[in-house]
Image (cartoon, rainbow, N blue to C red; front, side, top):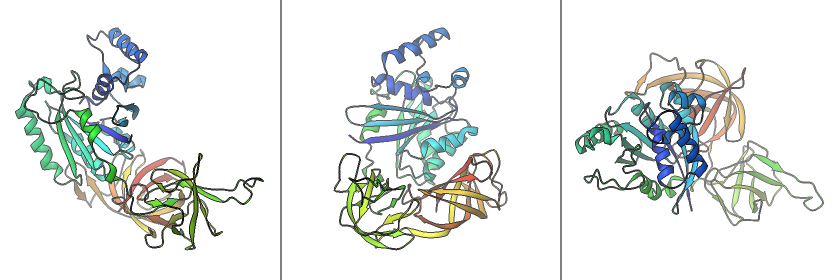
Length: 413
């Protein structure tokens, strides 16, 4: 059974938490004590029905304000697939939280209030999903019960969104009219919208094909740690442990270690339980080689005929997280796969207006929740692929040297 990671996004009060709560409730993925707890809390607030949003709004400040602030992760499963959902906030000041929740997602659900139509945050979240190369979008037009389940309202929103989405790089976009509060088209098909002939949300999530989303072409293995037990039983064992970023590795494959350039062949691939015949993303394994070559943390194991680019000059699209804006000539720490180094900001190319997707080359100040294209110079080479080809080796984070705080996430271009 495979695993689908998805995230929710939308403007404030579009019903993201209610939708996830309804999905969990109607799919029988809630424990009885959880349901009893939110029933009591809903009743104490004088609400006439159970507030399903309380299933994901776990912070006290979220429950008091009725909004989502932090990223809430929930796990559930059906007979067809396992799911991890990241319920992300809709407020503009929490855009960085949306980036965090979407960074590992295979699919994004964009919610739109049927009464309000497409808003600024719809553009913002859709663009971020495209920027993070999420290949599957489900646009849920919510609160259809408040517009009389109107087909005309739904079609108008679909038309407006398609016009905007033509400028995005998302190959798979689907539209579903729903009522998260009443459960229309969430788990079960709605009888109130006979004009909609598509599948409900849960069925769409269960059947979305993500097998081709993983890069199985480019073999990349960032070394996390060198295992040397030095015990009597394992006296000569020397394994290179880490998580396969992409591609497939098998015993007997010829490999090249970067940056040294030494070559060897894979002797065995070990896991905690047993040896395996092949390793692929996202497996965590230890690789042993036939030759004793110098490899340490931060190095990359690839194949001689398919190597990542080793470069110290990189162009990145940065999503800025911190209150302190980007220093246009500042020095930062860079974390890329398992390699850490220092970096200098060489140039700020432009900032993106998320509403229009236009490039702003005049205002180059990149503040919190803003996105811009930046050129960095690192102190050591990074073994990188374009983010569009490989999310694991194409992403990095920027860390402030003084405070050691993460200040930005970047996508290598």
